[in-house]
Length: 274
Image 1 (tube, rainbow, N blue to C red):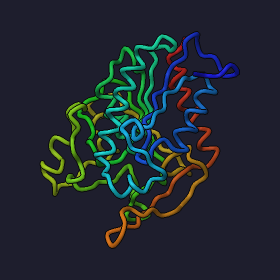
Image 2 (image 1 turned 30 degrees about the horizontal axis):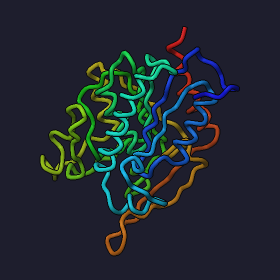
Image 3 (image 1 turned 90 degrees about the vertical axis):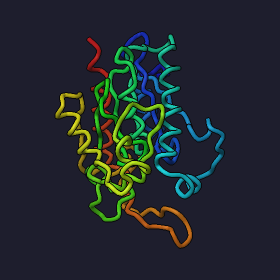
Image 4 (image 1 turned 180 degrees about the vertical axis):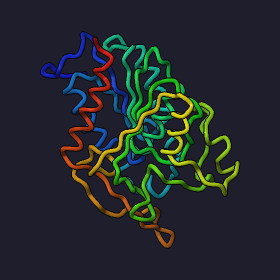
């Protein structure tokens, strides 16, 4: 809940549910919760790994032993449970719920936009979602904002392998039984596995062309995880041993960009108030 010195938006604050990325609830997710609390927004941040019995230190196990789709299925189930729990709470305004997700959590968030009740959820923010995992829904029920740093090449094979335009083999997809129908029905490990996925940007444009409430925000001087900290133009190692692969992994954003991102988030939340 917001602290005593936080901005007061209403007697009962709105709530932002934060779906973490594949590395667990890290610096970006914790910074988002801190900033939202200071601005009068209650937050719900959880650790889907720990909730499912995984005790870990660091990210090695989950970068080398699990796939995007398995991480996303787990995080989606936890996020869906968090939503069902949150809308029964009387300390928050259950008609003003928001969902935010980063990376694998961004893929979870955009899938949540297809299953939540508009009477409770006002908007979903999907930051840096992956093109692979549990797929992307054919239809959404609440407004969705897709957020990308223009320098987001996290996991890319080349410097300009941007997350928003990236495609990967359908073999990397697997539908979750809890999600709404979507791209994984015709693009997965069992259906057209050698074809390529649609990119997150192209998917969002398709939905928007049919009148669905999708908008984009692209941020200059920003990579993957706008609230992680200053930009780090480093590389990432995926896998281990002879099969290990080195990929681009730029993260973070300039401090002024991070501030503007938070301002944009809170402006969307405040827009629902008189």
